[in-house]
Length: 280
Ligand code: C5P
Image (cartoon, rainbow, N blue to C red; front, side):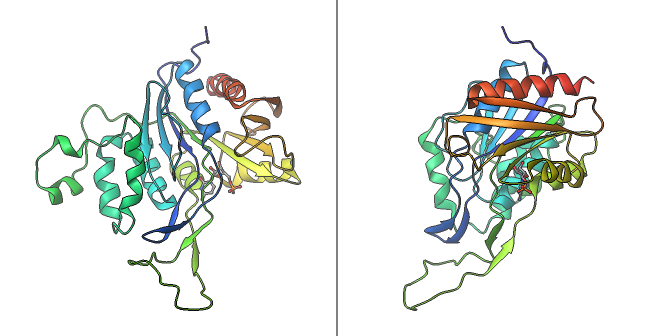
C-alpha cells in the first residue's frame, strides 16, 4: 500500500492544454494530452489527498476515481478556476465562469458531457434568480483552502485579443490575428499565497538547471519538475517521462533525477517527493 504522505491535504492540479477561441468554431491550442496531470491526480489520491483537477482545453481522459474535475477552456478561465479552488470556493465556480465569459464559444463546453465527470456544476440544483447566483460568494464551513497547488497545464502563452462573435469568413487573401499575453497562472497563484506549497513544471531544451532555478525564484515555487523536451521518446503525448526535480533553497535537497518511466510511475515518485518535502 502507498504511504499516506498526503493524508488530509487538499491538492489543486491544472492539466492539459488551454484553448483560446478565435471565433465560435476556431481556436489556438497545443498538443498537451493532460496525461501527466491526470496521473498526478491519481497518485495524490493514492497518497491520501483530496484532489481537485482543473482540465483545460479538450482533455479526452477519464476522470480519475475520487477526484473532483473541473473543465475549462481558456487560460483566463483556468486562472479563475484555480483561484477559486485554491481558496476553497470551487462549489461557486460555474457561476463565476459563466459570468466572466462572453458565451461566444460556449458550445465548446459540450464535449465535457460525453464523459461522466464529477463536475463542480451544481447550478441546476438551485432555482434562485441567476443574477443573484452570480454574485453569491459561498462562505460556509465547507470552504477549505488548498495546501498544495501543482501546475502541469500547458497554458497557451498568448490568446486572441478578442474572439470574433461570428465565424470569420474567408473573404480576404491574408489575415492577421492580434494576440495578447495570457496571465501566468502558476506565478499568480503562488505569489498571492505565500503559505501554499507550489509545484511547477518546465520543458526546456537547453540550460535546464539555470532556467529551472530562475523559475523557482521568480514564481516563488517549492519544487519544479523539468522535462528534457529535446528527447524524442518522452514528454507531451508520450506515456513515458523522465524528469529532474529542483527544490527551493528552503529545503535540504538540491535536486533529484527521476529516470525514464511511465507517467504513472513518475507521478507516484513526484507525489512521494511532495509528501516528504511538505513535512520538512
Ligand atoms: O514559464 P513557463 O511557461 O516555462 O512555466 C511553466 C510552468 O508554469 C508550468 O508549471 C505551467 O503549468 C505554468 N504556467 C502557468 N500559466 C502560464 C504559463 C505557465 O500556470 N501562463
